[in-house]
Length: 465
Image (cartoon, rainbow, N blue to C red; front, side, top):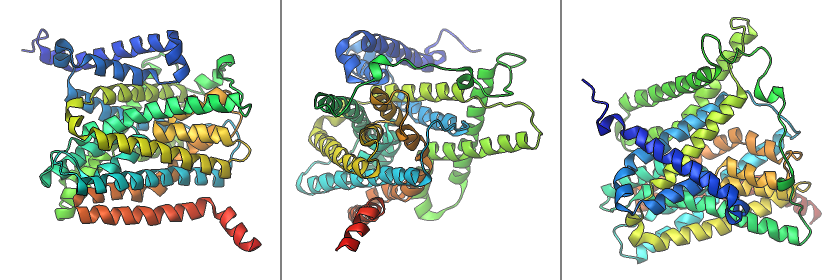
């Protein structure tokens, strides 16, 4: 007979209690303390940092469960991407297909240059520094932490720990990757705000975020012929059920690959990566399920609209908030005590290179809305898409420029461009030789992307000469 008085019946809920209480307190601080309000730091990051500050104390050290926080981070990432993929996209401002593709190329090439810079730091450090807690391929976690966020930083961090362990290295990849992700949020928010205020003082930028209040219409909440809010089943229940249905298909896909006989390479490389790509399979299967539903409605085999964009937005937002809190709370500084120097170097140079590269790309690709393009992309490439939107809202609250649409629609080309790069992330840590090969491939790939992005300027110069 189940005992509801036992900790096993409450263990998981306690972790969620910690997250939601920390979120509410952090949001209260952010809304009422001017310093935090001006910083534009996400409340979720503040909540995670709050938990980190409490972890050293005895009671909280026993209460906060690191493995549970890591599992919450992993699943929140996948569920959030599923919710986003199920949405029927609505375009509010004009943009061009080529501009979306170019923006996707900027995203993928930013991952590449982040990985390249990361390896340029960690490979020499490993060769010169006799530390068996440090892994030569750890620099590849920079694009996972900065470019992808806590979920992917955790996924690949765990995989890198396994590769390092097989080579006799005691590397805590999850803590290293999650620390990069947390630093990325701080960089994106603080550096973004500081640069924004510098431009404002120079008269190049007008801040609009404080004076704007967003107005919603009925069309923002529901579309035509949707199911009722509450009938035999609540509308929110339907949206959650759709998300969980897709995520169950994700599990079946990954579990099926796990059971296949794929040889030595498949067992050591492909299978761990498949489990780490839960967000990617969630996106693809979410789009597939959405297409099936839309096709059923087109042929009148399904009369009502079951997908509600507004509710799915809220589900995705909640998942990503939980992901950020849990991912930050899962960091164990004791595991980073001996490798703080490479972590600091990777985060610092990663931020500098990302800032410069995105600034150059924004000036070239978005001459009519250079700053809107820069802040949206810089926020995303150091945090998440939500951070990019937060920064963008300060100078373009009504999303009158195409910057917001570029940010949303670039996801598909970015995945197409970036998938080979993600495969390299699984190849690099296998050996020092593989890592050096990865470094060379990243350099060649970055040159190829740069030629594509700046092709008009390059070929124009050649014609003129």
